[in-house]
Image (cartoon, rainbow, N blue to C red; front, side):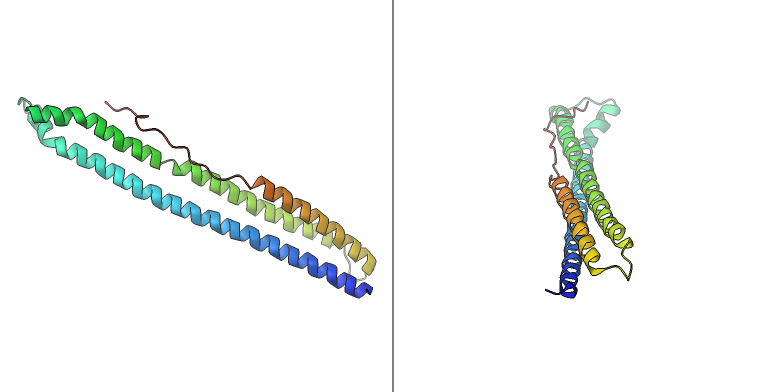
Length: 182
């Protein structure tokens, strides 16, 4: 193979690798951001439902509470309603607190996304560093050698970044009854 073909082959492989690496990490960034958006939407829906349920539970007992405040005696039904209020409200608050765990999961996703972006920036920085010393008059053998070194450095960086980012985002669930009210 001629020097020109060897050089062209190395340049093509390098550019293809950089493009593939960049696209792969940008796709993962996009996936993490979409997952973050879905987590936020789900958490907001659950929080809204939980707070509405608390409002409904308190509103259902408002009549009995009003009678008590006016000095009236609670009926047997009022006693049952009021005694079950604490447990019912506690259940809804636990659901709300569990829903707020989205913060932990979104923080993990954002951290992973930032690592991907930093890794891609470092990857492109390595490419720039190795390419900065190549002048138009640089001998093709030296260019091939430099391209081999940069390809090796980029492959190592890519593997290191991939292994660091393999961990998944985990949600820890609270058991019902973790929060006690009243």
